[in-house]
Image 1 (cartoon, one colour):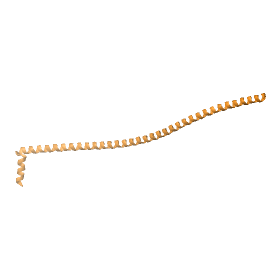
Image 2: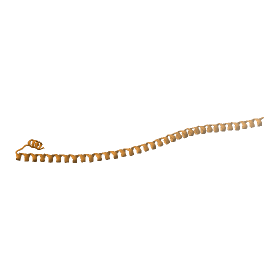
Image 3: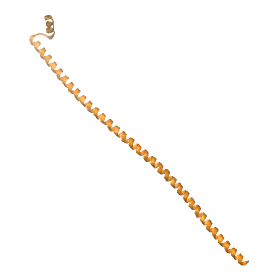
Image 4: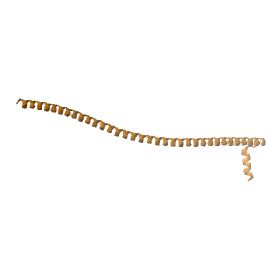
Length: 138
C-alpha cells in the first residue's frame, strides 16, 4: 500500500501542480481578456475621435468655402461701391462745371444789363420808356 500511497501522493502532487498552472493560465487569460476589452474600448474611442475629427474637418472645409464666397461677394460689392463713388465724383465734377458756366453766363448777363442801362442813361431814357415806345411802333 505504501507504493500505491506514494503513487497517489505523486499523482496528487502533479494534479495540484496542474491545477495551479491551470489557475495561473486562467488568471493570465482573464488579464488578457481584460486588456483586450480595454484595447477594444480604446479602439472605439479612437474611432469615435476619428469620426468627430472627420466631421470637424468637413465642417471646417465648408466654413472655409463659405468664407471664401463671402470674401468674393465683399470684393464684388466693394467694386460696385467704388464704381458708384467714381460715378458720383464725375457727376459732382460735371455739376460743378455746369454751376460755373451758369455763374459765368449770369455774370455776363448782368454785365450786358449794366451796359444796356448805361446806354439808356446816356440817352436819358429808362428801359421802361423804351419798352413802351417799342409797343407804340407796333
